[in-house]
Length: 82
Image (cartoon, rainbow, N blue to C red):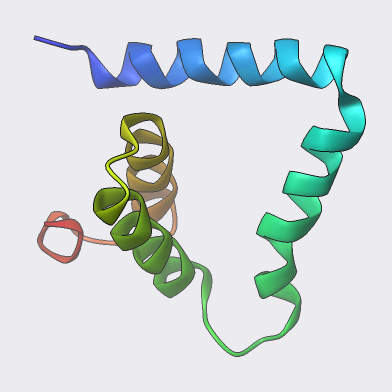
């Protein structure tokens, strides 16, 4: 069985490696992913739950682990995530 917390840590390390190779790519992604927070239309928990739904529909395991973690940190319940 996969240890999803360990998988997420490994994935984040890989993103750091990409950042060293192409810092503008990671900077652009971070700018885009943070843009929704500046509008004030949706709270962080809702944005993360939407991101999680997209991650599930695209079957992106890494994205799912990152957005589940973020949703939990922003107060989502296990029921909301399920």
